[in-house]
Image (cartoon, rainbow, N blue to C red; front, side, top):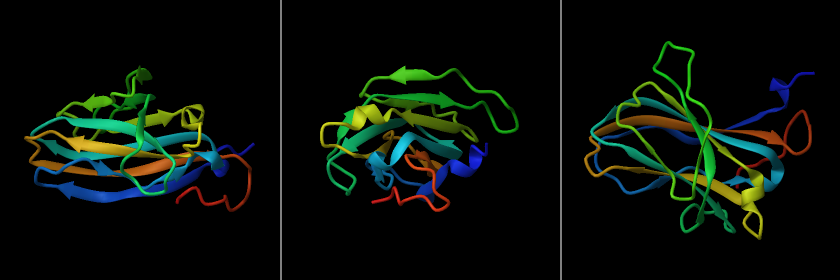
Length: 158
């Protein structure tokens, strides 16, 4: 069985260098109804100045912003060049505060599709850098397991 061949990787936030204080930024919206598993992978380059609050949202709309925050599980890798990470940790809808020393670390955000029910089929991340953030280089990819195994999966990006 080729498990890696069945996953769908979707770039949802191009690599960006946040050099000034910004408000919460959002990834693209992903249709959770097309997936049995959803995981956002946030890769950090340089993080200087402050922490980052990471929130997951469900929404009835295909436009990010104004959704309802939902709980998720996360795992933060160790530093670049090591093959270690913390245990999966569950957080409430209040989100996870990523430390300011996350340079070169990968944050995995796992969303249970069951949390997106009730007419809210779409999910996305909100990334809110702290007030003293001076430099944050990052990008996000969403990795999904499509509901149906196809050589070309149905688009989960809306």
